[in-house]
Length: 103
Image (tube, rainbow, N blue to C red):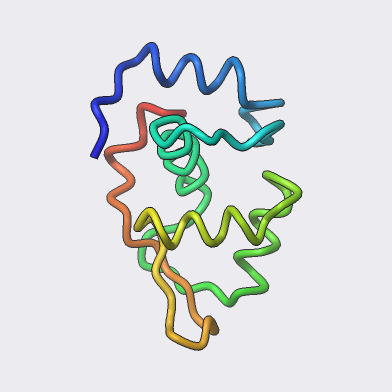
């Protein structure tokens, strides 16, 4: 999707994060590449093969960023998570191996 270099990941970590462990975001980027990198980092908080309720997703995301609803929407739009039409069930669809270098 994007040509992501190690320097791009470093910039995101240095400029957008309050902390990496636990993951805390100070500001959500408007630039698409940075947003994608940050969403990749956030996707690592979800387990492959596990299904989550909307409440469980919210509980994870509120710890990362105060506007958790926007982050949840971005995770769906950028194809990191998928959900049922009624929003009652969420699951990871991104290949997390691509994002391990973001840790």
